[in-house]
Image 1 (spheres, one colour):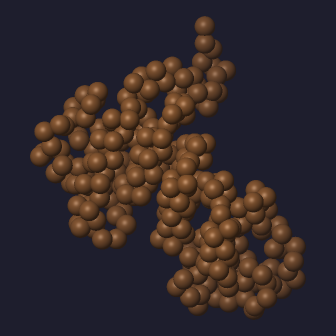
Image 2 (image 1 turned 135 degrees about the vertical axis):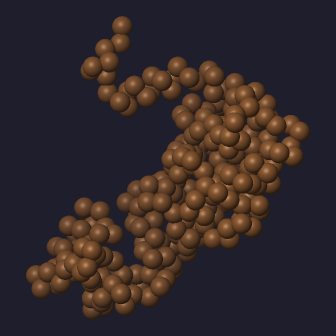
Length: 269
């Protein structure tokens, strides 16, 4: 008998995932993965034509999936029940693929995860799904081609930006697959970066504050309107502090590269 009062939430989720694993393995077949990769290949240009920038709403992708569903005679996909909302079929498969318990031969799931991330699908719960797909990729066996695709995704996360939790998963994945070329690119990209205290974690804050005098510490801690920090400092502390509003436009890219490089170095790679 399970005691639901003393059961912790992560343990509950683990037990639920284990109980659901047989069903997921029946769904996560190479044929189904190939089907959804084809759908993503067809939907991506349609969604991008509607919104050439990274979409912040579900409209472009929902319209693209619905358009494909309306003309595809093979819909619904293999082994899935037709859903009133066509996007739910895609997200159901992606959600199953994002959970632990991949089979020993999981090349098709690696390819699906990479394609889902490359297409930058923007649908309900897609951000949560992307984070967990990145975790699965970190635990998977990647060949040279798949590693190169994952590296390209990490570079895009630096230059184009992404959600905070998703970016953290990219940093963890990159620490596992890092190459000399990627490390050198991150070093060049991060050169000359300026940081603010709210862009650091606790360990970095303690390190930087320990290297500053009291006057500098007070100044970089000063807030402006809306509690936004007013001053930034060079990562190597070799330059005078400057106002955040005067930072160059590409400093956010430099900061992303610095964060990723920092995580790689912390792991000893």
